[in-house]
Length: 229
Length: 67
Image (cartoon, rainbow over all chains, first blue to last red; front, side, top):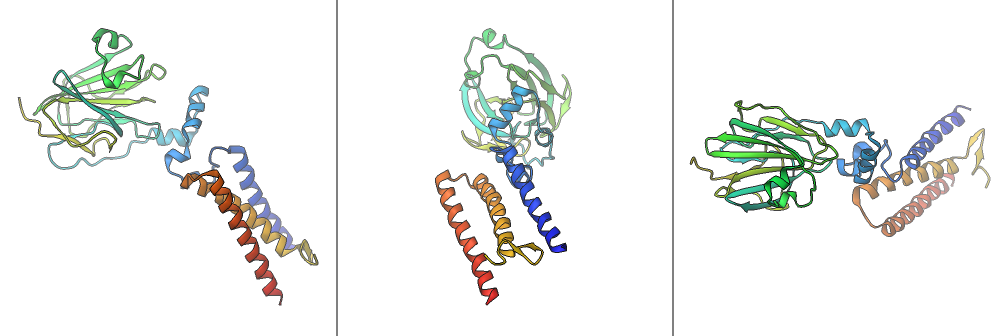
């Protein structure tokens, strides 16, 4: 009898695992999620479904809002302000726009590329594109970008970090104020379900990354060779 | 089929082993598919081949054990 009970218990466990698999298919069952990398743990189609429903899995939100410590490399190089992929590094009117595209699985806290003083924290909304009248590479795919632009005065001149989110999300938190002194790699804000961060550098800056490179906020050196004006 | 489905007051060890192996193999294949991103046709062939070999080894093990 004991043997029969043991067999039934084992079979029930296996059956439960299969039922869970079937309930969650095509997405991963909760039993195997922990062994999958974030992109496979929460596939894009699943996240887009959550976005429509306005409900998210708690584990995904924990991952999304994670804010791990970062160690800035030694030296004076400019650091990446966000996690993501470098999608463009065009020069327009003497400014190099280093565009970093964030995915759903990237850490969404932005960090200062250099130490210095915050000159402005500007909010830009839907009118920004019309007002500027220029079509930056990083805005081409975005009809209504909502932005915050942080201008930082560094020893090597002015740089700016733009945090761009979608019209749907429209939420950007900035954690620094005008006139505040900030450290290299310090947390400066967070885009909630945002998509793009642009680092504006002088065109003379020597870029250390190229298109397609993956960068980490506060850890990856993206430019050097900036000199005081 | 003597002892295959039912043996001495509990499920036969062979059918039990086959059922557990089949369930675990199915789940393992799903995990492998998600980690490797292989084509579904290749996955099905690998799954079927692995399952056949596994079942063969289980039955062979019982056969040798009963000798």
